Length: 117
Image 1: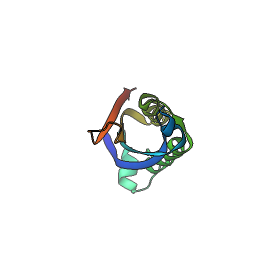
Image 2: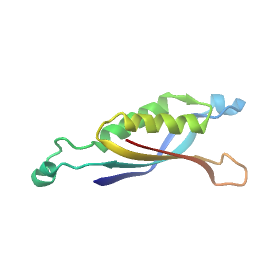
Image 3: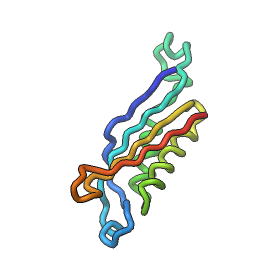
Image 4: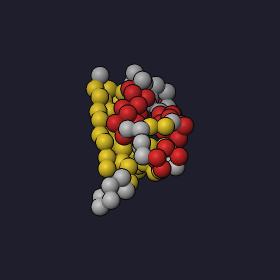
């Protein structure tokens, strides 16, 4: 079992329901943790056969977030988690999405969700 982490993925999207948030993109910061098995054959051959490809999932997440419009941080977080869990090689995943400057006196607000198969 291996745990892959993608840290501080910075993407711009429409997030929120205030009038200015509906027309202006904002930054979100995404952190992922993904558990998957690594086949012994991949470790022996040093070839990417039958492994979980973190580059592919990251590109899917970037497209989802950049092209989407989300009123709720909860919905964005869940959709990212669902995208990760579509890959049957994933046994567990955790997603945290930060919305910087969502509150006046806070650095950010974040939502975290996880799933296990």
